Amino acid sequence: MTTVDQDRPDSARPQAAAGQEPGGPSPGPGGAPGLAEEDERRRSGLRDYLEALLIAVIFATFARTYVVQAFKIPSGSMEENLLVGDHILVNKFLYGPTASEWERRLLPVRDVRRGDVVVFRFPDDPERDFIKRCVGLPGDVVELVDKRLFINGAEVDDDSYTVHRDERVFPRSPFIDEGRRNRDNYGPYRVPEDGFFCLGDNRDNSRDSRAWRHTAVPREFVKGRALLIYWSVEMPPERLAVAGRQPPGERLRTLGDRLLALPGRTRWERSFDLVR
Picture 1 (spheres, one colour):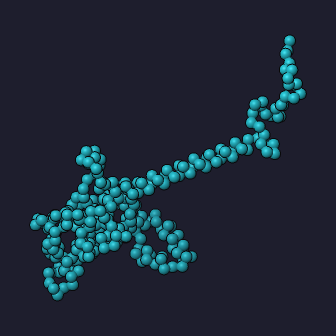
Picture 2: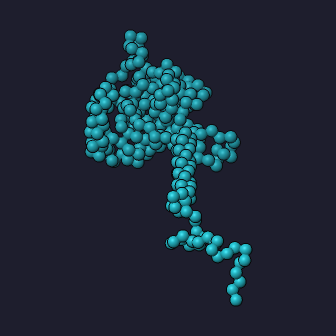
Picture 3: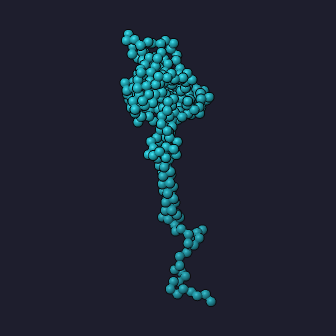
């Protein structure tokens, strides 16, 4: 015998809609099922996307500030080691500060060494970044004699990376422009305790510690050590200079021409070369 609920007749019980299982989601406004749930799922997906994007931006900012940063070589002062149009990655973690000796032993950090190719804020204009080779450490006595480099009285064997393209040697003479005189004969100069003496590899065509108003690069201006070339493209200097003076339409067309020419102008053989 079937027992009937006496308090609620069958006719008063809710009926399931056609095609809907009993106990399923109730129809939304206008009879559309689950619109509120779908909106909530979309909002949840958007929140997840924004959170992931925010995390990526934070990580990229952290990495760019403390780990690695990309730079482009704009001049020939470091030829033949680095060419105009080389795009390099700079290790910013290597010279990072440490709180204790065990951190220095555990982490891959160290001080700047002679011969390191370093990126730093220009001492005479800290808003600009320069790249040169560190040749003098704090306390070193640097001297150039007829284009030969001496550190603490000993001649440095730098022929493997130094380029001299001007056969002329300007002597120490008050009748010669100071810039030319200092190019080939300079010093002796003692590097301050908180600085570094830096020169370009292209010695006859480089404005560096020999010519700056503030000779040494302060330690806190050093950003990192040049690591590798990730891309190198040959772009004529005149094409680089003219784009900024063109009207927007011409500038866009010039940009398109450059993009089309990139594969042919890319120096593929320099890709992923270590900077030495």
